Length: 175
Image (cartoon, rainbow, N blue to C red):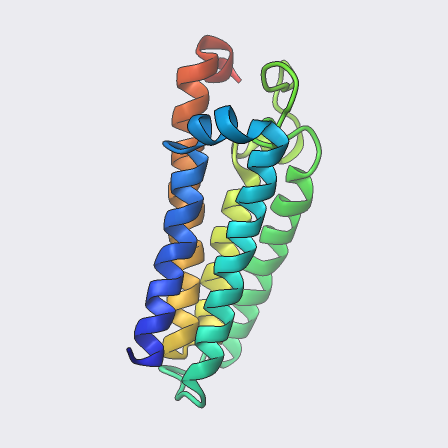
């Protein structure tokens, strides 16, 4: 297997394992492992597939940039990174998408801060960061990794939202 094929496989495992464990496998895994056991396995698999991606990318060696971001690309990337950082930091407080081990997810009656913009600011932050990295590191391996993070962020946000609407119902829709 070529190093690039290994990276593509690792990226698919990273995205696929996140989506599978967050959605169809979540309940069965919690039934067997408990909430904290599930979070431990989820974290280990996520870290393992991330390390696999990094090692596979390093095995590729020297690569040629597909384009030069130029000054405009650097400025645009800086702005997007700044917006992503604001979304990420804002998502760390009062985020109903964060794991809750006891009872239903908690969220304020009215969205505040970054939650007035989106229900999934952390996922949008990762999506923006993926775009930034694609702009400033347009190597074949960099683009594979950026695509994996971007796809996971967007699909992850959509799947989270769908699950919350199904499980919480009207309060989630109103929020």
